[in-house]
Each structure stands twice: as structure tokens, then as C-alpha cells.
Length: 435
Image 1 (cartoon, rainbow, N blue to C red):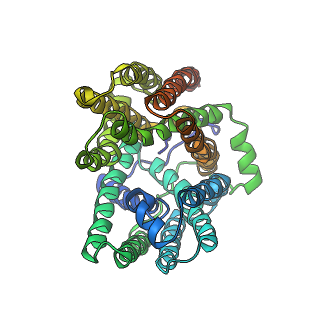
Image 2 (cartoon, rainbow, N blue to C red):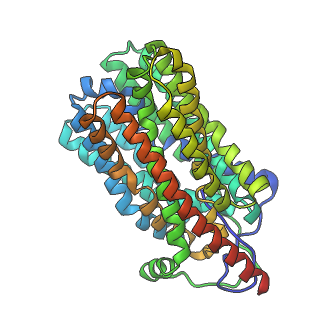
Image 3 (cartoon, helix red, strand yellow):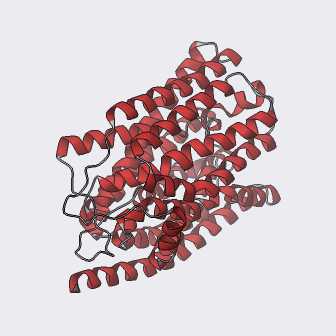
């Protein structure tokens, strides 16, 4: 999820030299494996919500608290992870996160109590969002030139979707094979844990740090605080961060399409699972490359694409809200919600690409990603609580319509933010051309 640029002034964001084809795509595949496996344990509720209740003895509120603690710790440590990514080899950071998460998964398989689980989910955030994620973003940025950032991050999102699908169905297979009871749930957790550990070892053995550009000036390693201050003083970084924030807060609302179709349109139970797989996995696989292609080949700019994608969400949301409820309009409602999700996933595939467009220096890109992640992913701490409270206070279709109106309004705000970001990118390009 991020970028680079070529120029001659020291302040410019100079990318690492472009890798040879085979080596670059090999490194990319290794990074995709890491990014597609690290979050399965923290998001185990996606496939095993009911077993969490039955076998871990958790109620809905307690599961929500586990997710909130994970998100709060992750948000607090993104910047720390960025500093680490600028100072420690990604070849060590990424495996440390994966193997650490796997070890925690082994502990979860012992079915500890609620208190220890709170600590465990906080520790999972350290492994994924502090050790791994900023390092992975920085590594992906190294792999492509300025004109390839949308494509690289779009393919990253798609690749993660493929790995997500394979690993999730693998865990479901283990769960079913072992009887779909507590033994099956324990086996599924261990499956996730073993996958993390194996991928961590593979990353350590197969990943190599990007070669240095011999023509680039040698720079001393900046101190942590100085790196944070250097990145934080860049206004363009904050505009990228807020743009990511706006995409992510709308993305959080996708969670409610399944209950909306179930309770308002009477979607049969047999279709709920298929719709969920398409909405969460299929569209991630399709949306990432779509956003990358449109960014690089049509709009020639990630910021421009994000602006128009935000705008495109508004009429789709209007269709979802205005469709009359009932079985007769079930299919159009499914199509409309899937279209909305597809646009969002295409935006998620490229929303880190503007980091190169706005000229973030390579030497602080890890810290910049940490700061941007802190801001951009912050909605995970509160959006679900707000959306859920609205639905509880407004039963039936009315509550969902309020949520969707809010999502459309946020998309409008996002279009305004992306417009400012586009102007910053235009000024950056003009300045680079004049230098």
C-alpha cells in the first residue's frame, strides 16, 4: 500500500531502483503471503463467531471488546511500527510478527478465559500492526516505480484476498473434518497458527532486503523522534492520512449489508454465505486490480481516482436507500450493494498509492506509513459502535437507511478531501518538473 518518485533534489522522494522482473515479483509474492495470513487470528470471528461464543464462553459484548482492544493497541502502535520499519530490516520484522502471531494462536487454542484473551488480542495487534504492517507497506513501495504504485498496491490487496480465501476455507475444512465442535474449533485455530509460523519462516528464508541505489547519497539513520517530526511536518502526509480515513470509515459500513439484505429483503439463509464470500473475498480480489488499473492507466493518479470513486459511491447509495423493500427487489438490492462494495475495495487497493505522488521521502516512508495508518485506520475503534447504536435505536429498514445516508455523506466529504489531495499532487508534479 504505498509509493515512490524520481528526482534530483535531496528533499524529493527518491525510490529504490526498480528490481529485475523475476526477483521483484518473487519478493512481492512472499509479501502477499505475509499480508494475507497475519490477520486471520485477530479476525477469527469472521468465520467462527458462534464457536467463539460457545467454546470460549464469550458474549457479544466481550467479543466486541476483544476487537476494540485489538484496534486501539494497533492504532497506538502504528507509528512505532513505522519507526521500526525505517530502522530494522523488514526481513526480520515481518517474520517476527508472523511467528509471534502463530505462537499466540497456539495459546488461544487452549481456550483461555476472557481476561487472558484481552491481553492476547492486544498482543496480536503488536505482531500484526506494529511489527508487520508498516514494514510490509514500505517493502511494497520499494518494488515499483512512481508510475506503478496503483498497480502494485492493487495487486497486493487482490493477492491478500486470494490468500484470505484459501486460508479461511482451509480452516473451515479443518473445522468440519474434526466434527464442527470444540475440537474442530481448536483445530481451526491451530491451523491459522501453524500457517502464520510456516509463512514467517518462509519469509525469513526467502525475502531479501531491497538493494541500495549506489547513486543515491548516503544518509545517516535518523533518530526515532527526529523521523517522526520530519514526517509529521509534511502537510501532504496528513491529507493522504485523512483520505485513507474517509475510505475506511465508509468501508466499515459494508458489514451491515448482509443483515440488511437478510432482515429487510428476506435473503434466504442459503444465499447469505454465498453473498458474504463474494462481498468480502471475491470483491477484494477483483477490486484491487481494478483500482490499480484505473489509477495507472485511466486517471494517471491515485488521488484523482479516489476523488471520482468517492463521487461514484453517492448515486449507488441512493439506489440502495430508495429501492422498495421486499423479495421482489432482492436481486437489484444485492447487485447495488455489491457494486458499492466493489468501488470501496477498488479504493482500498490504491489508497496508499498517493504517498509517492505527494513526495514522501523514502528514508522516512516507514514512519510516514505508521502515522498515516494511525489516522487512516482509526475508524475501526469507533465506527462499528456508532453504526451499531444507530441500528439498535432505529429497528428495521429505517436504521439501515440512516447508516447508508451517513455513508453517502461521508463519501461526499471524502470527495472533497481527495480533491485537495489532487491539487497537492498537481503542485508537487509542477515543482518537480521545474527543478
